[in-house]
Image (cartoon, rainbow, N blue to C red; front, side):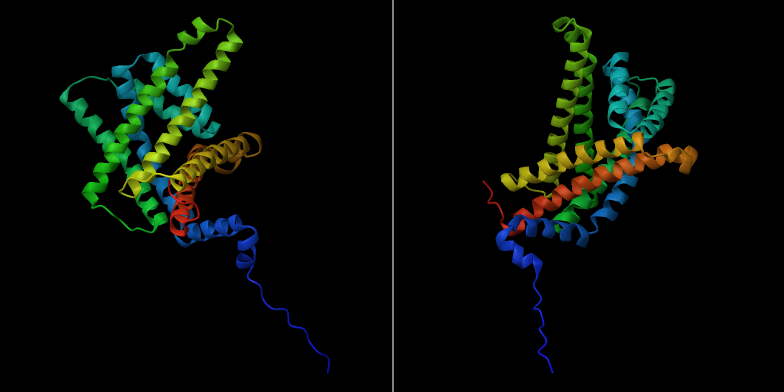
Length: 294
């Protein structure tokens, strides 16, 4: 009888942990995301954000019509066209135009009640996103329903204020024309400012979400690495999806009139998954002490 050689099993994660520690960390992040159903939760949160879309658009039309001018609403349209895939942008812009035609901003009691209900409806997506972030951190629900919804309302109002400033700054295009009379340079500067403001708004939004989700103030490298990962992942994945839809995807042939709805839901799902992935990165750094808080 010959001697048989039995190769010992080697756990790749342990073997590589000494040589490539970040590989083990990456696998740990992936396991956390899988264990806590990040993909499924991202889909659920996307659905709630989809339901919040019409109330959010109504609130935007009402606020812009009351506080800003028509140029601001046109600037909002430009930003949606630049960020969303074509099919999704067409769906959203169609709803926006219908609301613009029917809405009549005023300071009456009925209008304020309607605005309050719209803000309440728009906060539903953020409320569910905070719950999903709690799952990623594995902390469970840390607030009652009333407290959680109050926080979501506060975040919705904060996001609305940020949007007003963002759109108001971009709608004042005359400053670029005065400083840069050349049309090509003016267009370049306006687009540059648009994306810088958008990226800044994303970083601030992620930072606030991660802080609020844990019900305590968090700082340090792990926190900012998680925020940075979520921001970069959101920009990269949503931009990549938009490019795929415009170049290769033919959702109109498959889904027909529902193409805009499908593309918008997929776009939201990818964005929500990026945020939850960033939370997983932050949570793993905190749990393992991979990088010490400063």
